[in-house]
Length: 164
Length: 127
Image (tube, rainbow over all chains, first blue to last red; front, side, top):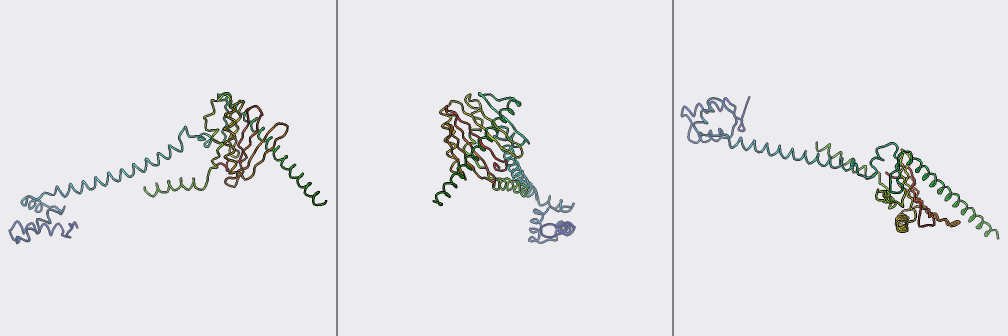
C-alpha cells in the first residue's frame, strides 16, 4: 500500500480530496490538505484534480530531489573518477617504459651492455657481460684469498708472540 | 569501490615498506646517463637469482673521481670492507647487507685514470 511521508494512504488522501471538493473541510483542514498535496508524491484522479484547483505544483520539490540525486550522482562519479585516476597514475608510474629497470624486472633474464657510447647487440652483450662477471668473480676470489692469508698470518704472529 | 581502492593503495605501501631497496650511490652510474660516454663500458645483467652491474672507465680522471666518490659514500653502509695494493694494483671492496642478503661492491683501479667497478649480489638483496 502506497503511503506518503505523513503515513496517509492514497485512498485516505483520495477521500480527503473528495471531502474538499464537497466543501466538507474546515479552512484549517484545507490548509493541511494543501500542505500534504504539495509534499506528497501520491496521486489519483481526485488528488490531481484538487492539486489543480489549489494550483499546487510538485515541480519545485521534484526538481530538488532530481537536483540532489544528480548532485550526488556527480559526486559519486567524481569520486570514482578520482580513484581510477590515482590507480592509473600509480600503474603508469610503475609500468612506465622510461622507468629504470622496468624491462629488467619483467624479464626472467635481462642483459645489456654499452661500449664506446653504443649499445652492443645481444651476442656481444652476453660475451662482454660474461667477461665482466668473470673479472668480478676473480677479484672477489682474490679478496677472499688475501683476507684469509692476512688472517692466517695475523694468527701466526699472535701465537708466536704469545709463545715468546 | 572505496574498499577495493584502499586495499590496492595499502598493498603498494606494504610492498614498499617490507622490501626496501638498498639505494646504493654507485647505482647512479647505471641510470643510463653514461651509456653514450665513450670512455665507459657498462654491463647490466639480471636473472632470477643474480643481480650484476659492471662499470669500466678508461682514461677519464673526472669520471674516476666520480666513481670513487660514490664508492666512498656507500662505504658508510658497508658491513665490512677490504683494500689491497699489490704489484701496483689497487683493489677495494665492501659488503653491504640488505634484506638479509649480501651485496658486494668492488672497485679495481687500472693505474691509468681508469677503473672497474662492479655490483654483485642476489636479486633478493635489491628488492
